[in-house]
Amino acid sequence: MSAFNRVILVGNLTRDVELKTIPSGTSVCEIGLAVNEKEKRGEEWVEVATFVDITLWGRTAEVAAEYLSKGASVLVEGRLKLDTWEQEGNKRSKLRVVGEKLQMLGGKSGGGQQQQQSSSLGTPAPYPSQQQQQSNQQAPSQRVQQEIPGANASDDIPF
Image (tube, rainbow, N blue to C red; front, side, top):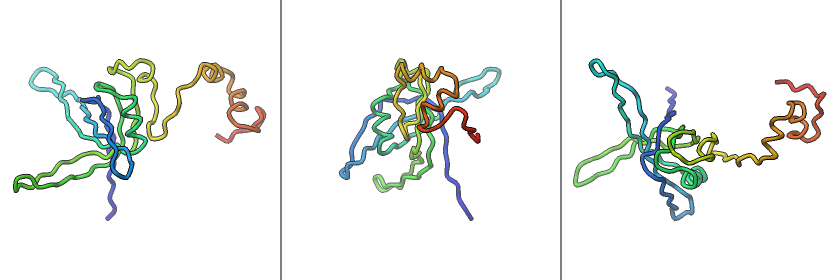
């Protein structure tokens, strides 16, 4: 039997990101995410939050610590992991998400321009310069020539 373990969550950070480095030099951070949904109770709709702990590793953790703060809206894609331990003779367990991709979304964070742009943190893209923004407003055939060396505007693009 095959297995599939994939989680996609959209929510707001419940606390500021604290970056740590393990002895091997790899960066890691733990973030808390509040995922809200509306539920009908009696005659009125009530907003209910589900709190999820997420672990980010490597460059994704570094970028999250640099650009995100409490209240920031994010989309996280990852996998579920069950942590188990023993505390005072009792076995304990907790389900968490190991984040593999993180995308910043605009919204409540108040982080200005950086939060309004959507960027995948797995492979961070720099914010476009004013010159790049102007070139994106040119005709599509001119953009193709600028973005792909050796491409001609008359070349047929198969997509």
